[in-house]
Structures are given as C-alpha cells and as structure tokens.
Image (tube, rainbow, N blue to C red; front, top):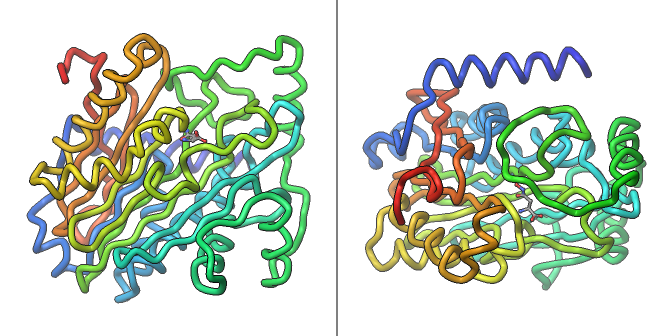
Length: 338
Ligand code: SD4
C-alpha cells in the first residue's frame, strides 16, 4: 500500500510539475473527437483515473465504458480516504458509498448509501441497464448488487477505522476547504470525489461520479454524487458536468444540471462553471466562505472548463496529445471575481 501511495504521489507531482496551469487547456474540440476522444476528471488522482479510461477510449471504446473503467480505477487502485474501499466512514463508523453513471442519451443509474460492496459505479451501471429504475439505496442496493454477482466484503480499512476513532475524540463535523492534500486517512480535508467526463471518437458523451461522501457524515446522509443533476449531468446535445465539494450545495442548486443548461444557453464550459459557482455564492454567501464547491464541465465538442469557490481545485485532462495534464481551476475567493 505504501508503494502504491508513493507511486500516486510521484505521479501527481510529476504531472503537476509538467503541466499545472491556470484555466483551461483543452485543444480544438473537433480534433479531440477525431483523435479518439478526451477524458477529464476531478482532482490530482484524476490523472490515474483518466489513464485507465483512456485505455478504453484509445482502443475505440465508448465513453460509457471509459468512465466506468476510470471510476473503477479510483475505487480500488487508489487508496484514497474519499473514494471506494479506502473511504472514511460516517460518524457511526460505517463506510457507505455513493456513485452514479450517465450517458449523453439520458440513460443513467445510481446507488447511494451502499455498504460492503466494491465498485459502486459498476452497480450503478447495472441499475441503469438491468432495472427499470435510476437509483437504488442502502440495503436494497446491496441486495441488488449481490443478485448481480457482486460479493459482500468488509471494505473499511484499519487506517480508516483508526481515523474514525481519532475523530470520535472530538466528534465535530466540520468539512474543511481543501487547503492541503494528504492521501492518508485521518487527513486534513474530508472530501474529494472522482467526477469524470468523457467524449469518445464518435462524439458520444458519458460521465461517472464515485465517492464515500463526506467523512463523519450522519449515517444515511446522501450527497450530490449519486444524484443525477446534482453531482453529474450529461447531454449529448450540449455537454456534461460534474461536481466535487460539499454536496449539499450542489443539491440545493441542481448544480450539474445548471452547468449543462447554462452551456445550452451559449456559455462556454468555463463560463457556465463560473456562473454556477456565482449562484452558490448568491444563495449562501456566508456559508460559501468556509466550504468548497468545484465544477468541471466539457462541451459536446470537447472544450473543458472548471471553476471553484476556493483555490486548490485541480482537474486532469487526457487525450491523444497528453495523458497526464493537470490544471488548476480558478476560484471565487482567489481574486477572480464572479
Ligand atoms: C459529497 N460531493 O458527498 C461529495 C463529496 C466530495 O469532494 O465531493 N468531496 O458531498
């Protein structure tokens, strides 16, 4: 595990040193589609997730297969206290996972508060493909997963359990802004979700979102990530958007849907993310000073944009030209006015 962490750390640093840049660096859109597609993801671990997705896209695979593959990478390969099997638990010490997947034709599936099942994104895809529903939660989601061949297993790591024990000494729920990244459980921040958007060589879009949600949340709390329109929204006619940060703000604003609708009205992905962040601020000006919200969007022709409430949000972009590009988003409380 240590080796894996070191690899991830090195990879992120190399990517950061190579290409960390302000704003949007996506190249001409048509060429992205013509050269096999493009995939973008939230946070520095998005670099590894993108590479997993890119293996599908570059082999001519669909955007849907690519985002599932990328999200699976984050759920298992990465020992991250905010996604998948290494996630931090809720305030009762229970690890619950949320995930969603959507394609540009409006097909979507999601699971929330799923316990003891690895790869929630794949369960979400089965909900989409094998049920008449969009979302399954809790015990029902677990039963469905097992009926589909997923195995029940204990996912809570000893490190996450120890972090929870330490947290219980003060037992304060106080999401912090992502001022510092540290891949160890019990770290300084308690959120980070993988949100991934892809466009394939046929110009089809898809997205996926996977998370263990806010660490130390109330048992039963569901964030934005599995809610279509809040943590993820995809429409082949326009583009796609995903979110990371304190999910309650995304839910209040139907935020990913909002970003896509703003693009439909003519905004670029960057302008739409910025306008959606402005909406978050307008709705709760005081609260927005002390919590993080981040949006990432891609238009139907592959243009990429991002914006956040606070500095520190980075996103990864991968296409035929670059596999490890990492960019820093602009932010409201960063001197960039809304
Ligand atoms: C949630 N949005 O459950 C997720 C957490 C997250 O970056 O994104 N953190 O609210």
